[in-house]
Image (cartoon, rainbow, N blue to C red; front, side, top):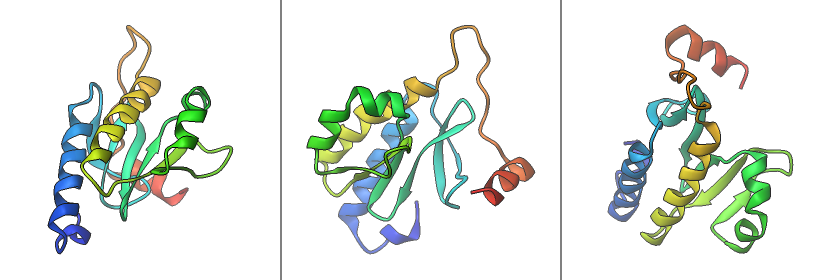
Length: 136
């Protein structure tokens, strides 16, 4: 768990629950992040989630965002990063937010899983991860 939560027990509990929820989703692996040096969550070689302050940044894909556009726009906890981005920021400050994260993270995981019969790509590690970090 990141040091930023050490002084806020409620924040620690919410983040802990979200991390447990993410790890429980089929195909999601916890591994060092490409964008942050904290742990991130990966599906089929793609980083789909990581924490940034009180937000969980989640890679939904443009197709999933488009299919859920009205619902996402209506929820004040969800912020789209940019019109062309695959990512949304989810403000995670209460227990109620864990349910939203679980639902949206399942959509993100589903969008990134390999087609049936295809092998799953693991998260990058070591030099491969460092190369990816240089470009982001």
